[in-house]
Image (cartoon, rainbow, N blue to C red; front, side, top):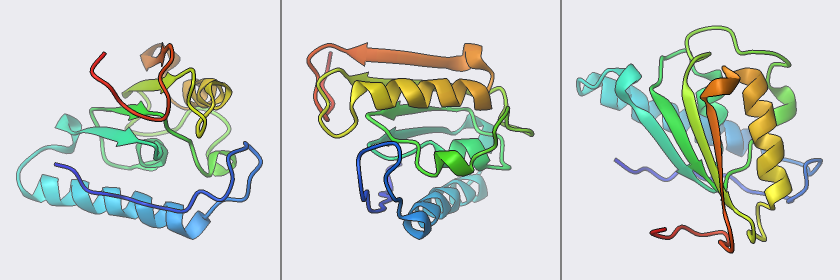
Length: 143
């Protein structure tokens, strides 16, 4: 099931100002979707989040067990507000796949690399997989 979850991106550098309230609302929208799916009978530990050009914030802060996440050309907003060590609790061992293109003008490869390194400090590092696609811009394709 897809549900858009938006926030404003104010800048594209690691030290750019962020739309904190919009980012938190986007995470709440994801939470509401998961709560509804659990009410529909799907256990939260069977739900994998897939995101394009958004964020893994929900995966890193949720108190509900998730199955994992796949992210494409994503930022990690409010990164500085996240814990400085492994997340405690239920999602420490989730698997996360971070994908990006090396020609992405919106989320440059260096950002994706920084996000992967941050994710490895939050969850079990062996469960974080990074895939880079040569020549791919801020898009998805069938390759």
